[in-house]
Length: 148
Image (cartoon, rainbow, N blue to C red; front, side, top):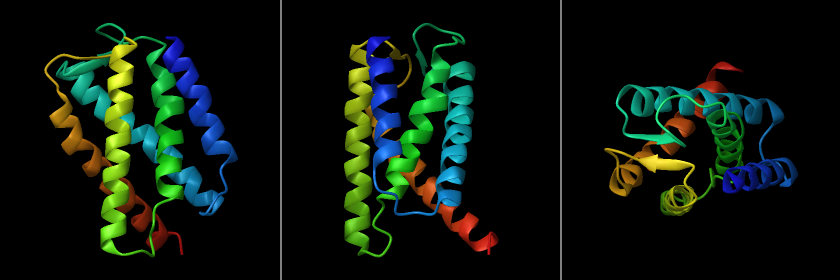
């Protein structure tokens, strides 16, 4: 639990104090979308299929810290620094970097015992994170197109 609380404080601080490159309206939508995507993913993969979970099987109040703080903060950080105007190579490298960061964070979360795997493994995560990042990018593209 200490790792989760420290992570939550660090993620909120980072997302709050880094220089913003995106408009506040986009950051707000990114944060909300990150919460919804994370919650939907967790409902299906954790609660329905028991692939992984937080703390113990079932729903715990503490797991909402992840959904309400870690998901939106990390979504904002990922999208705020995304190299939109750089080459496809740089964009791909950025996604790989974030995937590696998420895998390391997942490992630390498991080691701290606030997260666990059942029928899940790091390979699934390694393929899932880039997909989730691409979904975030598509969502922002959709928002930009329809908010004008």
